Length: 141
Image (cartoon, rainbow, N blue to C red; front, side, top):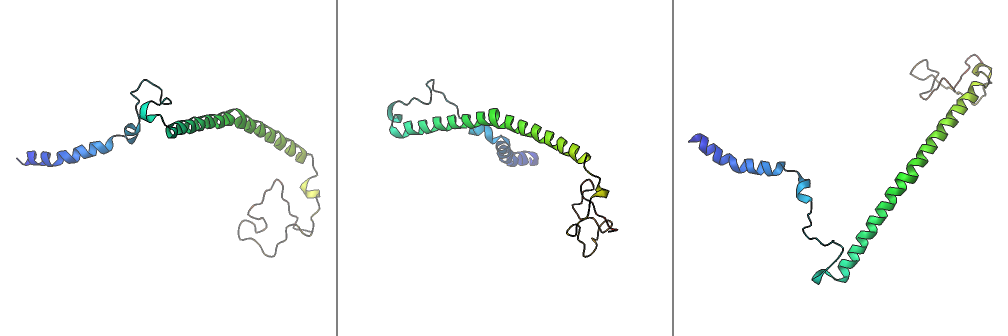
């Protein structure tokens, strides 16, 4: 008797839980049962408002297709070309830097590497954004 009562009480909750488990996407899909295209209106549906809405929907579809094609066929190739150009320039720059005068021979000017007190990290001389490949500091001068 107790098991039957528990089953009777839990059945509505189980049904509600099963309804919640169904995906929302399945309930939102629309099915057209009519064989005519949705752009053609007949009877009471054929009015200026519905024709205008259909024109707006067609324009929105065409605009979306335009931007999709523009993105795929113009923007993506431009990004690829710009990436190749940047890589070539990057390599040419570092090739030029390799032939430049060594850092030890470069003069240190009065406005470079001004230190009023040491930094509390590392050796106290290098800033947080210090790059050993390009930055230099001559402490002995």
